[in-house]
Image (cartoon, rainbow, N blue to C red):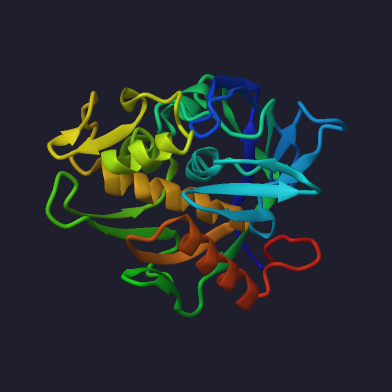
Amino acid sequence: MITTRKQRTIADSVAVEGFGYWSGRDVRVEFCPAEENTGVVFVRQDLPGQPRIPARAAYRNDTPLRSNLECGGATVEMVEHMMATLGGLQIDNCEIRVDAAEMPGCDGSCLPFVEAIDTTKIVTQDAPRRGAVVCETIRASRGNTWIELRPPTDTELSLDYTLDFGPGPIGYQRLRLTVSPDAFRRELAPSRTFLMQAEAEQLRSQGLGTRARFSDLLVFGPDGPIDNTLRFKDECVRHKILDLIGDLALADCDLIGSVIASRSGHHLNAKVLQTFLTKSQTVGRSRRCA
């Protein structure tokens, strides 16, 4: 175990309302202060007994195109943007109280959650934050998509992500970034979920995402976003890094290392993290980093 810094929480509860992209169901999310060593815990207030679902890799339920958690039969879905917000802002202890399974999509970014949290204060607590150093290169791959965790070149987590869609409106994008709360707010939080028009129409034909409009996120046609405009020229790769931060936040500790990825998504992000946690024996009976 190493100590990276002091743990942090928020001073007061803040809420965000919206609807789930997949289900179309209205949902209210309340970020609440939590005691030291609580970690991030989702609370399903709409279910009997208000079951608690820890936001840790051991509870991840592998689902295409999103990150879901399950504990004792209770689930929360599409948690990556909330986890990215808390991970990016270095908020370690937080209860997230929800009244539906799927988290709100909002505008497809972390900005609504960051703006809500910024209406209160982030509080430094007395307990040390646990950290885990990447000591050897760990790789997960599938076809031409891959991700590697490598030993650190600094004392923080650095990310290097390449996105290559070939000819077309998205094309080739690459971004290298050292994660910090300021960098997350400025460079990543406003970047939105994206998909191609054909993917969006296929999902709608399956009865999914029917409430979401093209203006609610980035849907790319042949000439670029439909009914929307880019916030960054390379917004797509920024959002992939945002998702990656959310997936790695399920380590429930600070990772110290370098992450190099090419077109990696939630499945590979989770796979490389789980391999790292297993190899470093940071997941034990307490399911905490050591």
